[in-house]
Image (tube, rainbow, N blue to C red; front, side, top):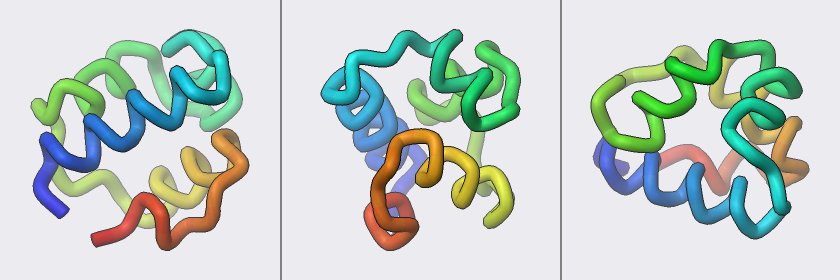
Length: 67
């Protein structure tokens, strides 16, 4: 999955769940600016730990955020 595709997926899931970037960032224990960069495709290669925390915070299977 390309960084932009992952970012689009993150944003769509976040919006579907009715969360702001700030709310999701807090739940996933990342900064809002880092989440914004992920959603914009500016940050690449988030660690597996970060992806796991995002999946848990979004209540989706990890596979949904992996390539």
